[in-house]
Image (cartoon, rainbow, N blue to C red; front, side, top):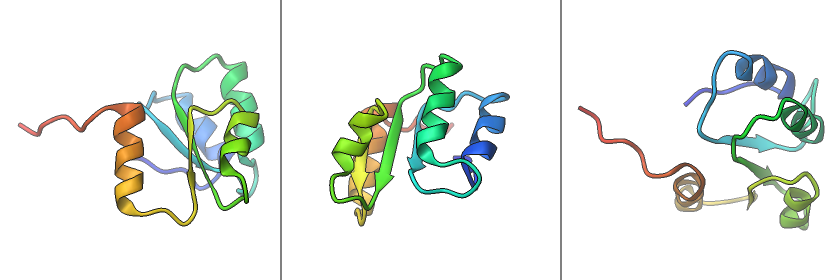
Length: 95
């Protein structure tokens, strides 16, 4: 798992790597989640995106930006794991 401190750093990462899933907050410094999603769509990147939001209606926020799914803050580790598996599949067994 890799991390980016803001949307701009995420785009720089996406120029080099293709993760199986993007988990993003909407409120970030430098480039927020709305702009990040615009850039992902403009680059035609086919990567599922899950929005993590404390907004009253996180689902509506996710739908607004055409994200694959959402997690409403606060969420449990179980909810996070279930969401990652849902959109990215189960982890590969280690050899």
